[in-house]
Length: 115
Length: 115
Image (tube, rainbow over all chains, first blue to last red; front, side, top):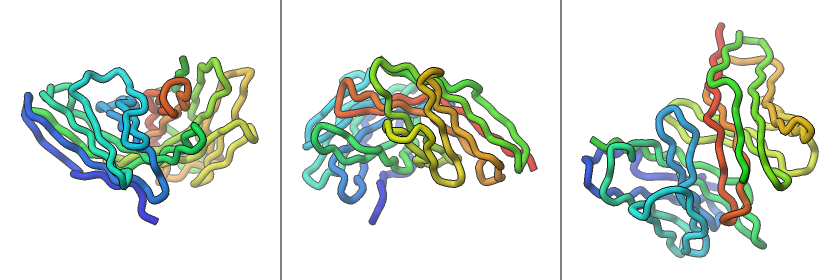
């Protein structure tokens, strides 16, 4: 059974650019959540995808968007990058059934640096 | 609204000593609580979770946590620290009032283990 994988591992962009981060969920999981972890902070919830639709969103602007595919993998897109977007982006997969989301398992993260 | 507070951003113990990492929660509904560990430059690994069953929860690597409703606490303990326990530890509560369920994290406690 493969765990949650994320790509790329590291990424360097310049301010104003756009970036796409990818996540493959764990086998048997149908829900993907994305978190942003700034240096020295706990992870902050960006949004969650279930059945290919956004299923909840944290306090992040619309330039943060996402997709979920039929195989439950997911993408996080960030437009018009700002310096404060530099962070570790974590993807977590889980299984939702009967309106309840089970334990979230995290990938290794993508380290984004915005110059 | 739910939240967690981790007391102490940095805890240092000697190898073989008791590890105690503190977490207090605030929740208007019965909470689901988690402890995750993060090693340098890695994602989050689930240590243990409380989901309203037994109040004493045993996790991996010899860690355990006790849910105390009267104290709104969910402290993490390990009887004897090992050098490999040095990492950052995050307490989290499941926010299932909004989406299907996203995690709200504390700011983390960095554990150092001295030889």
